[in-house]
Image (cartoon, rainbow, N blue to C red; front, top):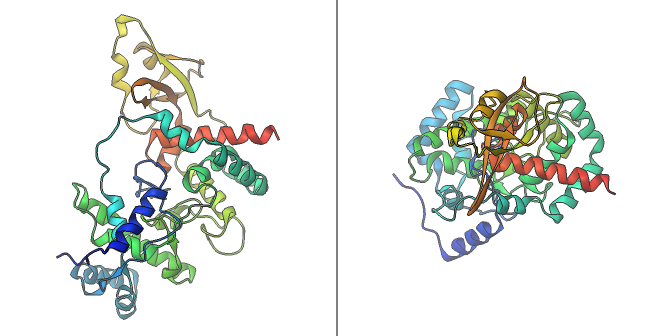
Length: 375
């Protein structure tokens, strides 16, 4: 049954402010980190002002009671403590509204998307971030093989270098989505996912010896500079500053190490190029054969010979022994941009399952590096 309270005018005003502050972002990969970003999803980030939510006493919901029973049996939690905890959680309607599918609008536009991320303010902030944490970035690259510019690109796209980490209480946001997800075709699967993240939130808090209500993040529950979901923190988070705890909200150094570790665990290969520009042949004998290589998953699985035989022409000839995926960056009414992506490009898409996202990370990181080299 629905337990939502009505939303007053002040809630509507507050929600409008949150939506206005949200940047364009890739599809919510709550499987990733932050959805991993376990990130994200539209892993759109919440504004710096959180919705306080409304009390509905989740502890009285049957599904929540069943979840508590499972946590007691499976993870050894005290039932009374969990009941007391869930009775304090707030229902965050703005999280529900932000999870609803966006209405059909203009065609995808890579140039417009890129412009939101690769721009002067973010580039300058990236230079400052790189200068401040150069030692940690160098150490992460040496340990995990992930270049500093890629880590810098991810932090810049995700949170504008810590400026937009979100101030929702993670317990409020994730509980709301775990038990009152909006009515969409994937509702059951998404609620199951967020219940898993709720379990991981409680486990992470217990393992870290912290109050779960102290965890703050995005409207989807993504935490810190790296915007990791709780499950990703537990699996890929790194105490990179050596202070004995993993804190992705207050330690940019932990975020740097955790991002590098995440990418390394998702297929990043040291020294491998990321993308190569490509165009389509005008040879009518191979007309449209390249379309068979579009939308074939987030992996580099085709040989250069296969792609070229289908009319894909690399702008720079890559190594013949590598595997690639064909990347199409749609540009609205303008011609689509094509690239050949390697395993390293697709490692970034595991952080957020979007070609636009991954390429914006690559381009922002490169722009920051160039700007820093010119200082």
